[in-house]
Image (tube, rainbow over all chains, first blue to last red):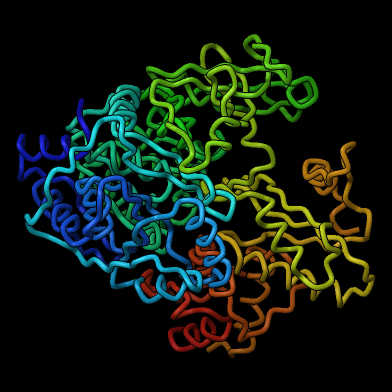
Length: 548
Length: 83
């Protein structure tokens, strides 16, 4: 059996000078790492790290060369890398520190690796009194290397965390075998070969960026053209220029990026996107309108509707669960809205105001089974909406140091995704993500994390605030809405409270609030169990009661 | 040349209506926009495009960050200098 380091060595033996990663920067400069360069840089990083087999190493690095080298370097030394985002300029240091604290307590890492650009920030953000060693690496290169630690295929290769206080408490453990098997299986679903050119701006601390936008191309011996998400938001067109210049063939994007690119790329002179085989829409709800807008905007540059595919994925299955076939547009179906919302049933209907257009995420990929069940865990027939269960040959090994969370995630051998959806003509249609989860720009946001922040705001009645997401068709993603109860009726005071809520959420989380409603006591609705219902608040707010 | 107060007022109206979506918000000309999280990085491109469409002033993508433009005032001064 093979491990990821074995695969890297094989690739170097087969073609040391083949291009592995091309890093593209905002100023247009490019850095090319051949397979031999990458392995050399990783070996040098491994030597600098000085870790033991099984050590967990947290990576907080901004420079992509250093990050790629450190990531594989930790593996070469037998350690377990986990990539975390670094603090953005708006995040309050205390918040970053407290989410790090939760992570450090549960995961007990051996080391934190950073780079010169963010080292000072990272040092200042570690919780007080911790003794976690910090190592600063800087674009390592060479062939120093380390002795083979003798890792086995079933050893944990890496941990994936999602963001926020809640996400950082559950590290998804993936073994070498699971990852190698998964990139093979998912690769089959997108007809991936070593001739592909993957172009990506996705962050590597997120499953889509790490697996589809990094490990699959690198381990599959294809070319990867990679840019920083921070550069890309400033200049979204750089993604399209990279596709055009490098002959890109595959690109993964969350739904909002289709709207973002279609609306914001100004200069399309000389762009040729006809080399693309597929864009894959994944990691937030897929809107048919976003695909249409994108295809129309870039039709002259060679984008055709049959390039626009969709996928349903999660870190627990390494990445992909489903993938719509490459070479044809993701299927859509118009259904009766009332039957869908009230009876949880898909009833095909004519397009019109009483119907809704759903986008299919395609059939399960090889090695994956999907089942939809009712509240009593009974399998549902096609067209009936229920809870989505997944079984996969590359299912994760568990949450790191969290056997409680791991056993709670499975039932009768099925992983309970918490997502809602249905099967339609052999394909999976996802209708709602994990209970109350908000997805903004492909990023998972737990409402409880935001509510905790809102509850600290003076004037908000403690425990009487909810956060929820509302679809915004213009941006192609969800807007965060906060509704908070207060005792004051004074309009000026309420304005102050709303402003303070915005600040608290902005500085304490990854997202900005789009709308804040400061409302009277007892505006929020409790469920029969006495808890405030987010979904009821959302319905009430959408029905126009937000201002009262 | 458009005077600074007018630019600030117009830009404020655009931000409150289109980005912050709260016409009642008291947005001070010196209030941090990006580093405070009031405006997220995805919306910065919108701001730049609006400025280009309204004043014909282009902001280089590399300059589009909180270090360079974090307040209404910073945008307004740049617009005035480059209009």
